[in-house]
Length: 297
Picture 1 (cartoon, rainbow, N blue to C red):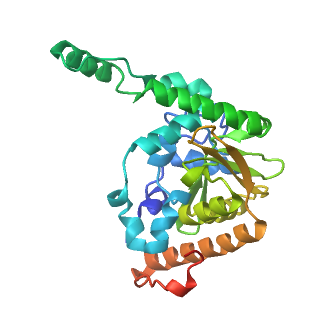
Picture 2 (picture 1 turned 45 degrees about the vertical axis):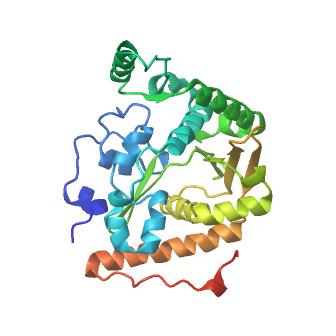
């Protein structure tokens, strides 16, 4: 069976052996460059990272369902939704504000009741086809959220390595991670998450439920496993939540180490099942739901 995360092993690109992440041209960086960089990681755009093969934390929910779900992950791609676009806007505003202008553009006002207005809108979209068009309101809101995050966690974000990508081989699998902010000295990691809490509830219990529902703890276990494979320091895993609701509350949450360790064990089980599937073609059975085993009602 030919699997996408094995393609690099079959047809490697050896055009460049430069492993200095400060001088490798991100536009032409090969997968071999990414692998050889090891724990130094590579500084490549987010779009480039997602276009490259490999299992990432965002794939784990599909892998937990079945290997065939992961094989066909493009079928379940939501595309660019308004919520995802806004989340990316907040991330860029907070972590990479220097890239805002080249990645986003604020929409102008057009009178769509006239043919000229419609033509002007179409011309604007063509002129900015390489950037994401956003509203002034969304830009202002993202700026407020970024301001609040930096007020609470600015010292952390300013001193960490931001948006660095790491790739590693795990037997026949290619794994990749891209932490929002990572401290190589301590191994501590932070991920920035936007959240629209019900009734503005940002309590620990509400966030625990959200973490569980979104599988953020599983992603933490996956990243810990990848860092161990790369022989990188492993420390605390933190989630910086910023609310989209008025006031834009910020909370810096550290996941208990026991929870992350348990999640890492689950991740290794899933990856072993993946390796077995690639070698035999045998997938797991159907999912069983037991209402008595649910943590939350």
